[in-house]
Picture (cartoon, one colour):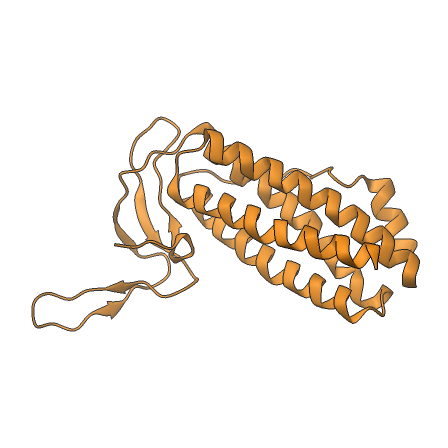
Length: 198
């Protein structure tokens, strides 16, 4: 039984409640057991592994479609850190945000494709264009304070999205992603508050 959401790109049905294929993702390998006396093998990314019993709801789709642009804005903000901040702690935080959220974007994009949705894209406005312009113009300690303040607000919006998914969603992959967002970004908020206070 496959338990980790990161192992699968798709694990849900359509919005109409029909079942959809389980598809191997590009994350951790999925091992397919062989028959009696036969060796197992590793599934190839995109390989159909069967059908899920889970059914996707509109809440699951909204969560993925909303979280992708939200994460992309976080990546845009994190990319500003290296050339503008001399804080090693802030650079490390930005790297962690980048690694985690790129992986989640890839997983949610694959999941949407597996359930027959094409993410058409829209902007996330948690941090406004004016705030982004101020962040781009800032340097040094002023940048650090503004980045931390804006990213805390940004992460808090992600926590709200994740809580809604846990309340309204049904798809195991999206529920697991929401739990990951809550735990990972909750820890990052606490760390950013420490950095902001210090």
